[in-house]
Image (cartoon, rainbow, N blue to C red; front, side, top):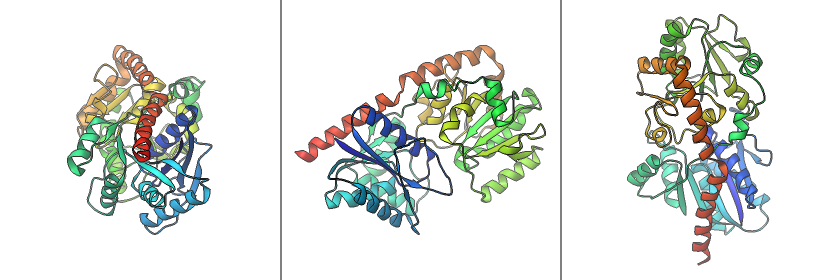
Length: 381
């Protein structure tokens, strides 16, 4: 079998990680897999894939990006490709063009989550969903929503996690903290940058409340790219109103309360998790929650919003702390419990590791292979 895994968008960032890890797991199973991914200077995302073919996208819109992807794949491909796997709607458009040319057989689309607003993105998404030979979602909740809104019935394949990679960074908490410049200060980590979908303003309010119980030296660390837009301006004004000092990752001094790291390279992520005391994910929308799984593998507790996708694998007070979305008071309490309740913390960490061990990339690749083979058989028939 020959397969290509294609990413045509920088966000969600989890889609790039999914494409990289799935490609590696497919290769480990003996599948001839080539991965293509955009080279995005704005986000400079490093997904750790040494074999990926990076494609520079300079189009004025997503249609041009799809055409550029298709052109590069056509130039590189040697013979027919049985499976074209799209990680997003732009990649799907590129693969549809190649399917029409007879270069690609079946097009499999992974839906990480849906657009929240109508517009060009939603239309591109609809075309991708209705044109794919098979659609895969990482959660039952999103699969049911896709069926309800688009009349397409997806297959559910949960994401995986490389437990060994995240569980064994080879350093202590103190050494990891020193590497990033904050030492042994109590650290609450949030990923995804400052953006509405990540609940960033609620998180800031919750952190300000939690500091009264965690101590003035507590530090909120935010990793990931942030657009300096109207939302970010509001978030910055919130920080000033709450008396919180914000600085970038090179200035995590004692006076700083909130540290913005920006995008963190893939090979630094195990160290970053080890340098934190809990991961907080107060998102309003997630496709699966891959970062929560990585945190569980890393041995730190998760504080999560009560989203349906989290509830498919995470259980409150068993392998995480779950709080009501949008409630900064509940989130503050959840953070303090995860940081200070020793018995709860130990239980969450132990059970989180058990969960992570159940969801590996090899199992994920095996499920995708079953989808690939089923649609190869349909095409051959």
